[in-house]
Amino acid sequence: MSEFIAENLTCVRGGRAVFARLSFQLDFGQALFLLGPNGSGKSSLLRLLAGLLRPTAGRLVWDGQDIAEDMESHGARLHYVGHHDAVKPVLTVAETLHFWARLHGHDSESRVGQALDAFNIARLAEVPGRLLSAGQKRRVNLARLIAAPAPLWLLDEPSVALDKASVKALEAAMAAHRAQGGMVIVSTHADIDLPDAAILHLDDFAPPNQEAA
Amino acid sequence: MNRYWELLKRELRLALRQGSDSMMVVGFFVLAVILFPFGIGPEPSILARVAPGLVWVNALLAAMLSLDRLYQADYEDGSLELLILTPAPLELLVAAKVTAHWLTTGLPLMAAAPLLAIFLNLNAYDLGVLLLTLAVGTPALSLIGSVGAALVLGARRGGVLISLLVLPLFIPVLIFAVGCVDAAQHAFPWTGQLAILGAILLGAVPLGLYASAAALRQAAE
Image 1 (cartoon, each protein chain N blue to C red):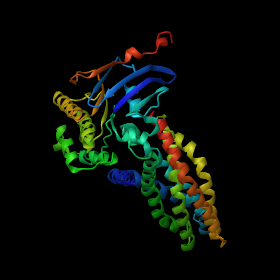
Image 2 (image 1 turned 120 degrees about the vertical axis):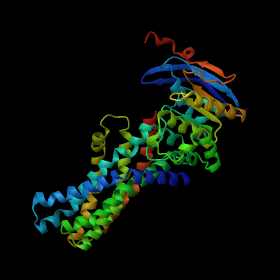
Image 3 (image 1 turned 135 degrees about the vertical axis):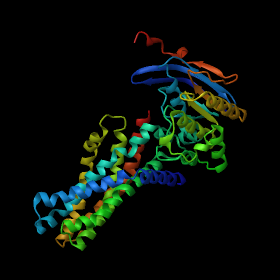
Image 4 (image 1 turned 180 degrees about the horizontal axis):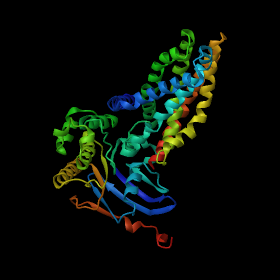
């Protein structure tokens, strides 16, 4: 019964329907790729799954419960990695990770240590955010995934700005997460290796009147 | 409640390390008030007469200056989305941001007020009452201002827009705060005005927190 289901989601942004009647089902340990051209609604869908956006129609169900009934516990079970990295120029990498882990309700030195190691940023732990490169900031943002455990990972183009080694680290992190029963939903244009992940083409759910409008 | 302290600690740490913002606000406040003796002449009785109004109007403007950064930085770097997704009531996190704003602007303004009292020929008793009004009034400014700061997220020239939104809402605070010190200067009872100021603060707590949280959720959509 424990699963994440989207039923007939419709998303309208700025008066324009982005996608309509989108449904999928995800079991623990599964992964889902969101594919589609620019503007097909991958980011909107991820924000909708995170609860940052409300669906115009349809609903999201986690383990039999509509998530709209309890947004706070939905927040506790997910990690969202968006386009911005939420790294403050004057806070060090370790401070940033500790802060987000505590805000998520977890704080353990060892997990933050693991997170730093997983993305190979342990030597940057005491470096303030303003000195980090774009790729390093992205790795700090991704390290949040490990610093506080949460079953659902929503990743919006996570490989942007990452070098090859870091993409490998991300793939390893996702594989370990799925091995423990975690779910991953990821949108990407680049090649990310996710064994037997389901694929969702956003084009398939483009509203029918799109061309006419 | 833990998350309240965590966010408060982070905000204070950010303010401490960036430093200059809070000092600039106090600097603006002191300089702007000091301009007035030059502008209206150094007659002590006139200065004492206008002192409460001067201090309060400039406190409003100084608080205003710092408001546009309250949520803007978090909005731009993606922290705001993560704060909204935090498994805690957003109102609680707004409370932490507002507390941090008051500690880094309202409190320093109060600390600078005794210096200004000397410039403006305000006696010790009246200064005491002025400090009381600032203590009760400036938290209300932070709360009301937070709503404005949250509403203008994503707007161009948000700073100017905040002034237009928030300054009219500051007027009741101004009226009762200045009325309170005025009454004290003329040896009238002044606790009534202070009580009304307290009531405004109590009203601003739920309104400010809920309205800010709703505006932030809207901004993140």
